[in-house]
Amino acid sequence: MLSEMGVVTSISRIHPLTHAQSASLIDKTLDRKKVSNEKIYRVHREHPGPFATFRDNVFTELAQALGFDGNDPSEYWTQAESFLGYPPVLLALAERLAVDNPKSEKGITNLAGSSSTAVTRGRLLRQIVEGILDRESEKVRPRIAKALGLPDDKATVLYGREEQTLRILRVILDGKFEVVYPAILDSDERIAYEDQIESFVNDHPFLIGRKFSNAVFGDYLRAFVVTSETIDVVGIGKEQLLSQCAPEGPFYAHFLFDLSPQVRLPEMSITIAEIVDESLVDGIIRSHLLAASGTSTVTYYSEGNNAAMLTVVDMPENATLSAGYSMSFGIREPVGILELTAPLSNCMISANAAVTISSPAGSVQLGPSVMLITRELQIEGEHIIATAGPDDEGVMIFARDEASHDPHLKVAAYPADCLTAHWPNMWYQWSSYSMEFPQLGAYIDSQAAYQVLFWIRRVLTSMKGSTKEAPSVFGELLDKLIIGTNPIARATLEALIEVGVVMREKTYYRLQLDKLKEFKVNYAALRDHDFAKALELLQKRIVKTDAILSVLSRPA
Image 1 (cartoon, helix red, strand yellow):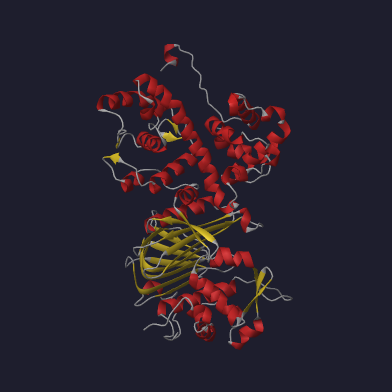
Image 2: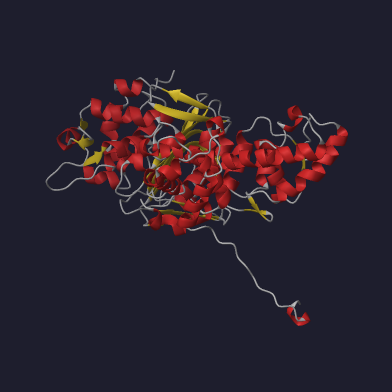
């Protein structure tokens, strides 16, 4: 239309800053930073070499927290520039780079404390995000106070992190709810405040129009709303508010872990984040699968009225666990209902609960490497498709009481023998995949006995061998990626060691084939469809070990 009127126009795009431009912005920001005694910060100018090394180490750690590889900015900048080259991020980062001796700093350690890399991804990103929020508060409060003539005691409580979060979400959701006015303001001040604050919100660094300027900010706000106990809006509940937000992204699980109350479990040498109930589990899993860059696993365990535990682990290819991450979430009082969204892979779900698996596409895809043991199972979809991985780890499904689904459900497996299922009164679709279990005896609860059987197979098949060496597995991989925090899995491994089938040798677990033969177990048969029959004698011995009976009791 403008061109038809003879008006010459052009389109300009704002690109993220390059590495050099980002370094220059940090330097110029620090040139204005006042430290003690009103002196200007000068370390970055007086020691440019050590400071540049420290700054780039932090850039590298941030890039890794975003999921990008590389040890030098030139290797990852084009991938990470939308966040690292975003001026509000750099302004917040500059505050945290203002150290006295950059040569003694170690990048991420300076920003995130002494905890391991496994739990610092969310903490590091959180500090940058909250640094931006705090800068906005410091920028807006004096202007609002001056415009409204507010005293300091009122100005200092305005436009904090929570208020900014809600106002940003209100813009994203096109005004579908009202933010509760700050209680410290009287009625006239509230009206004037609302008129003044709107322009600041629309210009917030987290926003571009009515969208988030970066996925990191969207995931932080979602995790903030989930964990906040004081969120207060008019016209919409917290669950409804979350349902209208964008789905969980790759950073959500990390922010949720760091924002949730944390408890140290010394007996397991881990720190867990406590979450409210099982309704958050599906979002954590989907976020983790988006973030994982290597071998990733999900383990979930619940038993009776005891606390439930969810652990997600990512180990980059050809690396140790310390190069990836591990996060455990605890649910103190699970309600016994777990809803999961397909596709699911590398998951070991052992839940004394009613489990529902659905898929927005209507096709429930499972595998490779899925083990599902439940009290009740409901499948919501028109198809269920199971697949196996290169190590033949397919899909095993066991429901103790019942499984329900559409009578016309279509079941497929690729290859055909990668799916094993068992529950009472199975429908005709499952006839090719049904496995009859041998009589396991009543020495322990039947559902627990099935879990032990599955875990025996999982531990043994995780070991790889050759013609010269007995099958073995790297200890850290088995402990963290496969066993995780599941107490029955841990007890099963310890029981296998107790009876001599497995031996811990330095950093490896090794299978003792001669001992395995005493229980008439053919190692090759463990991957067959009838593996339960092959493990019958070993399973009956394992359930009577001290390791198993220390966590499980015989039924009354």
